[in-house]
Length: 257
Length: 53
Length: 191
Image 1: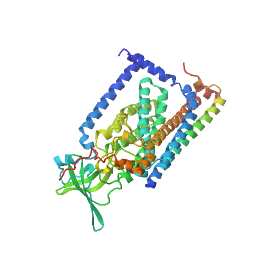
Image 2: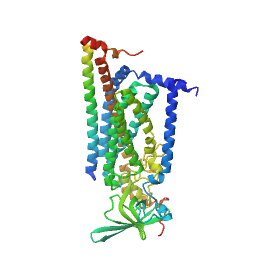
Image 3: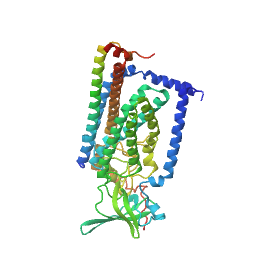
Image 4: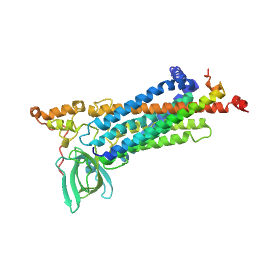
């Protein structure tokens, strides 16, 4: 316990280096083009390869190509919510101002990617399983994640005093993070219609490398794209808050009066 | 290609969502930047620009 | 302890409690969370005939019998989990992925003369391979899809379509590798 205050303080100071919105704007402007262009390059390469050049699956046929969209979307749906939870922690413990703005901006992007994951999963399930939707543990836990995103989006904007909204949404983000391990392990803990993960940390991927490569490319590309969109929205949000503070500053009001 | 409608719908959805989110973010950023630049010109040294100690 | 670290520990404690509560709840409801029951579960504790259950397992090789009653196709097949097998009767069109050795989930109820399904869902596994690679594995005798999952992924996941085509055209080399039935093939129980 004696080490904890120094660790806490150190973590805090590390994040406070980037808590400064001015420093974030500078950093964001520098990395934005790199993020955007590499994201476009990797996504186009991965999806193009997946759609036109990768082989069809021996039993699923060409419908396996939906995987190159569905799997990155599924990983980012969980990853985005994990990012929301980290923002919530930074907000509650260190009162990190940028974390609150980031939580506002990550929510809608994460909800969109979760909706994409659910929709592409449905489009994949109909021809393969023979049904658009089943209430199995994996599908249901991802649907719960989608509603957690919607709740977060609504809660963080629900209060007149934004600080109260940030606090409530941070608590929701942290509590909802319980759903993430449930999503991850649902296919191992219970019988599900959804198949287990093909790519694991422990074993060889049960996927031909001719499908793994385009999947890896599109996964990197779509993740970078997610980051690029969040960084762009966050930069815009910082600028907008600066605009608001300029417009409401007493000096300006005095000057214009 | 088998199951073509399902594949096209999936990729189409992805493209649509990516376009909406990407263009939305780009426009919002551009608007905020021009607005901020215009304000900076009218009130040269806003208090928000100075880094906090 | 500073205020920040107190807040951090408080949040960690709350998350731990919440996680424990969620884990206990999921444990308590785990029999309701499972999407399907296995044939051995059905065998040991047959559900009442008026209850809809989902029965999941592998279609036993050689057990599929397709008939036509007028216009509607009727299929009978055995579903196994390796320990027990249940005969399923289904009226209607089976999904594209349905084959011997495929995992399926049959939705229906247990009747006196077997399981009567109103819907059959195909459950595909987590292996993805091109058709040529699957053919090459079959030809070399390493895998028979009718008897279960493919061999360990490391033995085939780096095989390219070109390699597989070469294997297929040079069929004679496969002859030296005597066909062996996969160890995972379960013996279908007679019922």
